[in-house]
Length: 456
Ligand code: NGQ
Ligand code: ZN
Image (cartoon, rainbow, N blue to C red; front, side, top):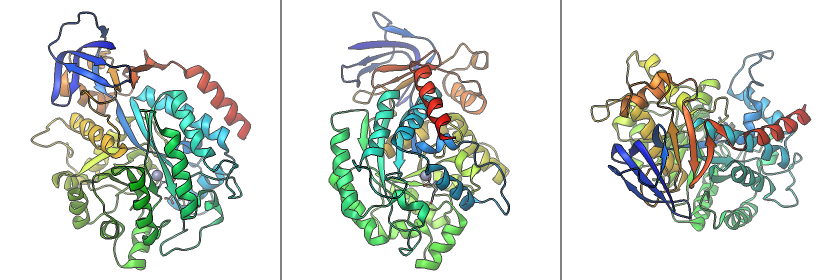
């Protein structure tokens, strides 16, 4: 049993003073008490928050940051970026994926993310044949999560087609493809690979409506149910205007409307990039209880468009954040971009705030924490008994935060926290970051740099 004590901490009901946290041997919070004396507990400096879930990651793309910012002849679009990305991944095998993911997860932890949803589709060898062990790439991702000590929901991706209506896949997509039997075997294998590890979980991700025809989507839902009744289901849904157009041409419905029609979308679902929705789709998605998986820095980088946040929140919608392509690895930047996009577009301020939650930064942070935890299907995102002991401490001594407490501290952190103000990070009862530095930072960074140098 470990006991921690903090001057102030964000609990499910709001900020509390003099908080004692007891953590059991399995890494779960056993007791959380406000108004407690420090007694025998380890005293934490600064304010304590639950760690932030990062609900959408393609880990390998971290090593591509900055490599798609040079104009080639013609116009640059999401689709030309995707070609660059397909060429980049040709050079990656299991060793590379493990080194990149470990480095990324170290950076995530230092930035305050304590859990990640890894939307994993780089399954096979460059020529499309499975590795000797067909789960090899997934196992590399799990090994990276263990090495860095981040909580991980592994979301193996089902990918069958190159476009709506079962269009044939492109050559660049052959590493992603399975038939349904092969995919079911992969899932079985991964079930045992994560069993007994409380910081690892398994879900499933049909890549998109483009890549998974309706009938197979039904099969995917059935397979998820065999993992667990509430296993997370993630899907890319309506990121690009062209995707919406193509979907309309194919089935007569917009992507979110179509998904809501053909799949039992509910609280265990996470719709990544629900960017382009009309008003009906926005309220229907909110009512479904599913999480909108928003990735504002990637969506900005790729020229996707803006999510309709105000209407979605008004309808009671839930959202979480992901760093997706990892062009940026910072929950603060995701939340800030989410709000600033809305302000620039609507010529208003404090779009995410409401009468019940007037502090904009605090509302964004807490909503993303709850939505992210729901989407990852693990007991995280709350400092409450039974949840994983995943927490971060904020450097309240930094001049920027001088005199700031409670929701004003979160408002300041979200909108003005540029220097990293996160000091210590714990996952499942173990400290992984101390004084702003991951305990394995040097070793993991050196392995990453060696691997990347070998790619050139
Ligand atoms: C992905 N990424 O799977 O990595 C996608 C691009 C696609 C983002 N959408 C590929 N940001 O959607 O076909
Ligand atoms: Zn994605």
